[in-house]
Image (cartoon, rainbow, N blue to C red; front, top):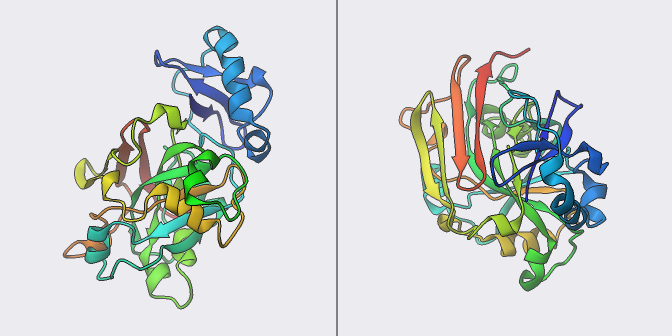
Length: 284
């Protein structure tokens, strides 16, 4: 299945993207795609219900806004320096163990919402990433069992204000958590929709120029290991997001360094997970 949510912010309705391309409103299922949904075998229940009802559901209105395909998660866990060539362009070594940092859940937004430049920021950067969503509570999970705890995959842009991240003391979270810095979606694709998560082309354009182009085969730490590893240090709750890292081509790695400004357009996509775009606007 491919899950979507559409509607105005905080008023999104759950829906489905059907194999024939129709986007249907699944509000009559009676549940949003949130922690309780995933924790109570919601995907299995939704799948059984959709087999009987999906093609009779009403269509979403044309042009209706995409929300994130899941409700706001309890946490967004990110993995840093997980592509060898991105670490090199950042002047850093691939770590012996994954670098873990957080984005505040308040950064979570729809895939095509505006990117709002933060006040006093001047180095806002892009990062196309493959993210996965946890389907079952995960604590001290063995790597061999990790995929049993997976709900699905989604496209994520891990925006970063590099000045906040690297020029202020403390942890990276300050540069990762500004409002609108986690556009997510448009779809959550269940694992059966993805032929091979280790072989997905990914790309990102700024003002129609391709700046990132890679494949998830270049991930250093793979998804089963990442889920298992993170679960050693915290309980991952159903609906939590883990973003797996970005390939090279970020603005910080360019010569000269290049960052976003109001009026820019960022577009990105991953095979089988769709595409998204964000217009860059000034701080509100």
